[in-house]
Image (tube, rainbow over all chains, first blue to last red; front, side, top):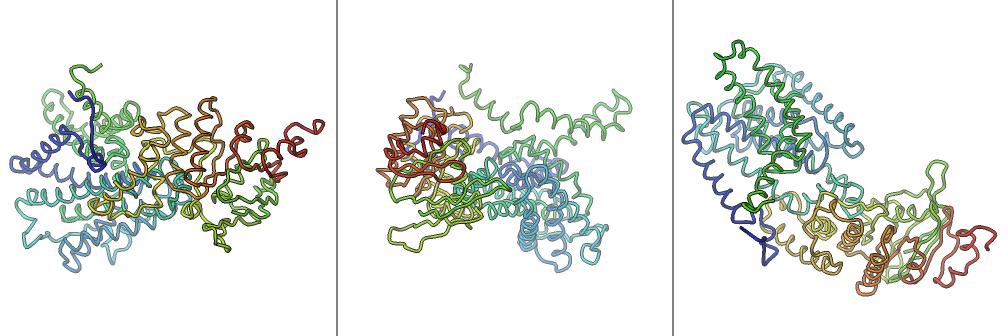
Amino acid sequence: MESGIFFESYRQDLTLRRTPAQKIRLALVLAFVLVFPFFADNYYLTLANQIGIAAIGAIGLNILTGFTGQISLGQGGFMAVGAYTAGLLATRWGLPILVTIPLACLTTAAVGAVFGIPSLRLKGLYLAIATLAAQEIILWVVTHWEAVTGGTDALVVPPATLFGLKLGGRGADFRWYWVILAFAIFTTLFAANLFRSRVGRALVAIRDHDIAAEVMGVNLFRYKLLAFATSSFFVGLAGALTAHYRTIVTWERFTIETSISYLAMIIIGGLGSVSGSIYGAAFITLLPAVLNNLGRAFRDVIPGIAGLIPQIQLGVFGGVIILFLIKEPEGIAKLWKDVKDYFRLWPFSY
Amino acid sequence: MAIQALSLRFGGVAALTRVSLEIRRGEILAVIGPNGAGKTSLLNSISGLYRPQEGSIRFFPAPDDEEGVELTRRRPDEIARLGIARTFQNIELFRHMTVLDNLLLGRHIHMRANVLTGGIWWGLAQREEIEHRAVVEEIIDFLEIEPIRRQPVGTLSYGLQKRVELGRALALEPQILLLDEPMAGMNVEEKEDMARFILDINEERGVTVVLIEHDMGVVMDISDRVAVLDFGSKIADGSPQEIRSHPDVIRAYLGQEHA
């Protein structure tokens, strides 16, 4: 049992994983993540890939909503920008994903910054409505600008290659697993680093008290737009990955429902927490899958349950959000922290 | 700093009427006056939160700078960059951030990391965090708040929050420190501590201090000069002794028949 955590330099104090227990846990998680794809079948690999992409998008949204306090209902729209940019670049000009993905991220960041301009005047619910407008405008453009996006028709993206290796075809999920994992680790580290340095601190300060932040020298105009751009960059990354991984881009994937389920991820996972975004992404992605499997398992016991599953999914989805908002507004990240705190002093916890 | 004929109106309400005031380098200037006299409006005008309709606020960053910088048309963050920090009447801290992070935010204008270097961390951002952590630790030491450095500010007592807010302003390394009622709601011991901090900041760090305060004992004890506002106009300024016996001041505070 430890009596406390002691460091001899500020450098040690600033590390992300500070205790031996944290380092061991991280090593275990990494080991699992590295071994997992060799034992998992396609079904589980697909789920894992979905979680990876959702985690990237959720971290992006959390940067804006959880950390900077700017509520956004435009998540789906921004993902659409990333997905269509990457998809179109690959389809029209046959560009490789190492070009399409960064370009998609940058485009989404620019679009995000433009739709972030109202945030300088609007807060809270009013801003939520403004970002809802962003969502609707982007989807309208996507479905009506037929010459470029193909309108409501699906955009079929050619299978991607990376360093001469084909990612599509048989075993696509296995190969994509590593690509998505790499991007997810990059996103996680980037966000974690951002929030232990100057810019991240300024963003959190804006969330807590924008006037005080301004009086302490934070340029609100620049930092709010920066929050929108940085957030949208990663949301665009999630969109671009969706496009290449699924090889089909349709507008239905990026509706307001997407925005809401991403908001649910960060609420359930933990607002203003990078690891929470990942927990939330996993939770919301796995929830329907688990309910589906449960439904199938009880098919013989409870007749007619198969037809009810979609309704049950919606009900549970709503119920879980309400439960978290009431019982643990800080989300799974906080629950996990409580568990760790309990066992840190175990067996003398009281 | 020279404030010239400053007028500030909200609709038909005149918050400040042609207020002129000089803030001298290195002094402690107390601004007093009855409630609603415009003291906080004056501070908000200096720090750029309010836009006065008329008049000028000229800040002279260096002693040999005759020209100075006009503050009335600048944004609050630009004014902070010039070296003017402040605290608020009702504590305005970042409640969910730790004491350390609140103070480090005070270092914002002295740091350079951007989104990219911050996200990469290794190199500039890490070096910078360590450097500025040392500066902040020195302030934590000075204000005697070592045991609470890791606590979220929202969980602290009122007196400690006031102290952290002073620390955050100090972290900016200001030339001029504006304090809006730094001792409001404190007991005698806390007031004594705060008065000592303010004197130390003024003497050891050479920071010019402007404070709004209602406790006349404190005002008379620690300030070099006192300015009095009443109904948005300045009615007097001078040494504490002069102000104590100034007929207009007595009238403003005690009413007509006492004067």
